[in-house]
Image (cartoon, rainbow over all chains, first blue to last red; front, side, top):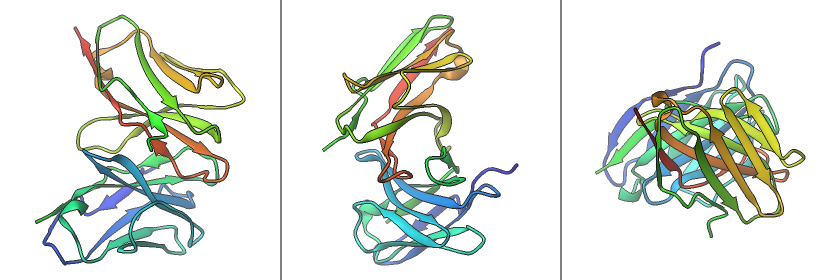
Length: 112
Length: 113
């Protein structure tokens, strides 16, 4: 079974731009979560989607948003990029509640 | 407020010996704990988990121990192998935020031949 895939793997943007990252979960998994990893803050939860509905949200500004499609694929969007948004963005999928989350390889975003 | 803490940023162990990685948490609502291993430029790989109704879970060379009264968990790897060299993250979740994992800062484990 294929793992979680994320595209693109690397991205360079400039301040003020917006970016959309994509995540395809493991086949059959309906829950998709997004995390941000930075050297200073570590791994932090962004939000989680299940059956196209956002169920949980972390402490990030409204510039960070996401959505999930009927095939469970998910996208996250960051608008008005700031230098501090440079990070590794990780997507994880799981079958459902309280099931183990499996991570993709991440998208490394650099904001200049 | 860091709810999950891994106080050792790094650990060096001889090949063949036991590696013990520690994790402390403060939120008594956490009821599910996981360990992930991460190589550079890759996503975290799930290793082992434990729910709060147990105090030990074993999978091959990996054993996780949970001490609820001390709010402490540990991961034991025995015997340690060079391929175990990576950053290890402990994570926790609660019933209310089941898929919201709270991670520790990670411990870099180096296995020396």
